[in-house]
Image (tube, rainbow, N blue to C red; front, side, top):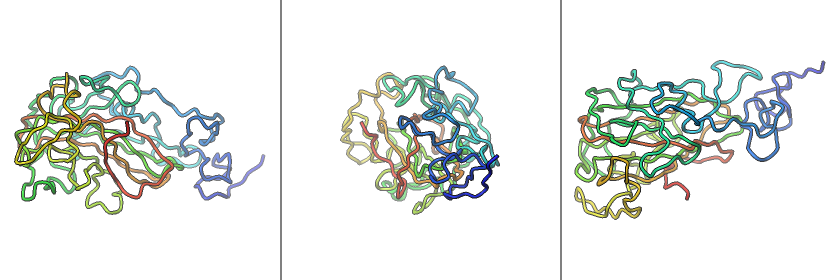
Length: 331
C-alpha cells in the first residue's frame, strides 16, 4: 500500500493523514467543502457535501449550547486535540454563560427564534437571540436580579460619550464557541441586529446596555477582543452610530435621523425604542487555528430596560480581512 508521510503542500496534512491532493493546500481533511464548485476540498470522497440546514426544528428554549451554534449556521463539530484525518474544522465546544465566563444563571437569556416580530432569520430557519431580559419571545422585559463581571476591558467608555463609563453588568447572557477554523478560510463574518429599550431616555448614561463579540486570539490593532463596533470604535449600544431603526428625533442632546425608519420594530416588544437593523461583522483568522468567540450582552448599572441581539448567518471566507469591522449588512 502506498504511503507518504511528507506534507508536500504545507497544509498540515500528508497523504497518510488523509490529504487527497497534496499539491493543493486548500484540499485536506481540515478544509471547508465549498458549495457549488464540484471539488472535494475536505477529502471525504464527496464534493459539495458540507452539512447545512442544521437549524431546522430547534426548540426555542433549548438548553444545548451547540444548538445555539447551529442556529447561527455552524453545523459541523470537531474534536479537541485531534490529529491526522480526524483533525477537521468545526465547533469544538459551546457553552451558555455570563459575560465574564461564569456559569449561566437564567436560561431565558438565550433563545432560538424563527422570527422576532417582522424580523426573520438571515439564513435558514432559526437565529440565536441573546438578551439582558427575555430572549425567548416578544416581551423582552425580565429583571433577573443578578450582577456579574464583564469581559476583559469592560465596562468602558464609548468614544461617543466621553466621561461616561457604563456601570456594573446586570442580567447578562453570553454564548461562547471554541471553533477550529477551516484550513482554507482566512476570515469569517456573521450578522447581528441589536434592539434596546434604553433609547431614547438613556443616551450617554451609566445605564447603557452593551453587546460585544469577543474574539481570541485578538485581531491585530484592537485594544481588546471585541470585533463588533462602529467606525468610531463605539461598541454596539444605544450610543453606537449604527443605531438607525427608530423614529427621527433628538435625544440625549444628539440628533437621531433614523434613516431606516421604525417599521422593523413592529411586534418585537421594542416599539417606540430603537434597533440597529441587520449589521455584518467580519474578522480575520488564521487557517486551521483554534479561535474562541464569545457573544455577550448585558444591562449596565441596573437590570431595568432590556436589550436583545439577534445573531445569524455565520460564514467562512477564503478572502483575507485586514481588520475587524462592522457595517450595515448587504441587501
